Every structure is written in structure tokens, then in C-alpha cells.
Image 1 (cartoon, protein in one colour):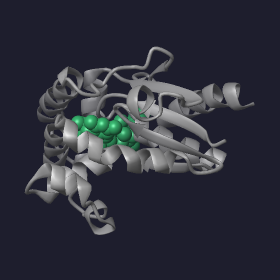
Image 2 (image 1 turned 180 degrees about the vertical axis):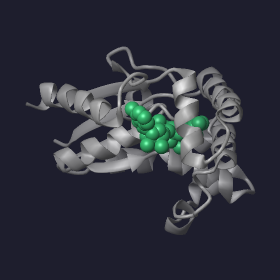
Image 3 (image 1 turned 180 degrees about the horizontal axis):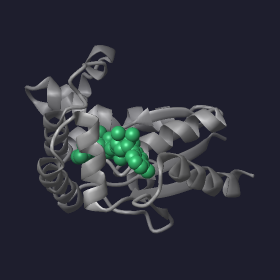
Image 4 (image 1 turned 90 degrees about the horizontal axis):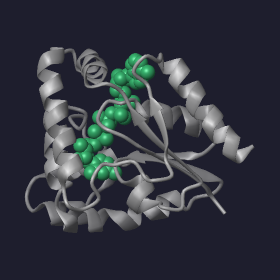
Length: 194
Ligand SMILES: Nc1ncnc2c1ncn2[C@@H]1O[C@H](COP(=O)(O)OP(=O)(O)OP(=O)(O)O)[C@@H](O)[C@H]1O
Ligand SMILES: Nc1ccn([C@@H]2O[C@H](COP(=O)(O)O)[C@@H](O)[C@H]2O)c(=O)n1
């Protein structure tokens, strides 16, 4: 049976960084599920048709990490039929041996509710804005508003809102370096996997 690790949390909390490192350390597959929503939003046209017809090229677009792509992603992510169109792909990905790490917003609550380990990664709004601004080469105050706007939309939508699964372990990375955050996550996983 594959060992599934679900990592959820708000934008720029560090979940993708942790997910990649954990997957590399344990030899698991990794899926950044946010990319599916970013590619759907960026594709344009009918978002449901876009989600149903995502291609490898759509997922490799160079503009998917932009702030605009993040905002567009969170708008299409609120449409239930878009989410439905992406469920099967994510579950099939998670079923790969020897295991998989998926990061997103609803992995522990909807996509993989039986995951062996669930992490909910957070950080203060300001810490997240500073990190994302450094990544994009922009101003932290402008990024802060965008992050809050996106988190609000993600948390308040009716379908699969951003929230910790009841059995998720909370990991606040505010005062942690990348290395420290990864080490904490590794030790949580190792505590379950042995
Ligand atoms: N503990 C940390 N300390 C400082 N910087 C960090 C930390 N964790 C991650 N970062 C940096 O913050 C930025 C956001 O991290 P990451 O992409 O992992 O977040 P995310 O939660 O996956 O974001 P998103 O949901 O928007 O994809 C990256 O530039 C990353 O290198
Ligand atoms: N499981 C998920 C993953 C992402 N989303 C939506 O996509 C937006 C972009 O995600 P990033 O992780 O790349 O920042 C995000 O704001 C969500 O609206 C989702 O709904 N479910």
C-alpha cells in the first residue's frame, strides 16, 4: 500500500518546499496540486473545460508562478465542477508506490482523507508576504494584500475550503529556517513511518 503524505496550508507558508524535500528524502513522488489550478486559470476560456483538458504543456507554462496566475487559480478553484475534474488525477497520482507527497489546500480533507501523515503548514501573514515578495522580486506590502485576498477566498469557498484536517499535525514555520522546517517535517513523518 502506498504511503501518502498530505501537506496543506495557506499561500507561501512553505508547504511546497517541505513537500519536495520530504519526497526526495523518502524516495516518494511529489505533486504540487496548486499547479493544476494555476494551469486551469491561465488557460482561459471555460474553466471546467480547461480543467478537463489540461496537458503537459499547460502545466509547463513559464508564467504559472506569477501573482496573477495565483489569483486566477483561486477564482477557478472555487468552482465545484473544476475541482471535480481534477480529483481523479490527484488520487491516481497519490496511489503510486512506494508513496507520494501531495501539497495543496484540500489534500488531507478531500483528496486523500486516509493519508498516513497529514501536515498543516502555516506561517504569519507577514512572514509569508516577505518570502513571496523575495521570490517574485516585488514589494512585501502589495504581496501581503494579495495573499490575504487569496487565503480569504480559499478559506471561505463552499467546496473543499482551506482548513486543517482534524487529524493534521500543525507546523508553524514563522520563526524557522527552511532547513529547520524540513527537519521538523521529516521527524513527524519518520515518527509514523519508522
Ligand atoms: N521556513 C522558511 N523560511 C524562509 N523562507 C522560506 C521558508 N519556507 C519556504 N520559504 C520560501 O518561501 C517561498 C514560498 O515557499 P513555498 O513555495 O514552499 O510555499 P507554498 O506554501 O508552497 O506556496 P504556494 O501555495 O503559493 O505554492 C519560497 O521562495 C521558499 O523558498
Ligand atoms: N489542492 C489545492 C491546491 C490549490 N488550490 C488553489 O490554487 C491556488 C494556487 O495554489 P498554490 O498552492 O500554487 O498557491 C490556491 O490559492 C487555491 O485557490 C486549491 O484550491 N486546492
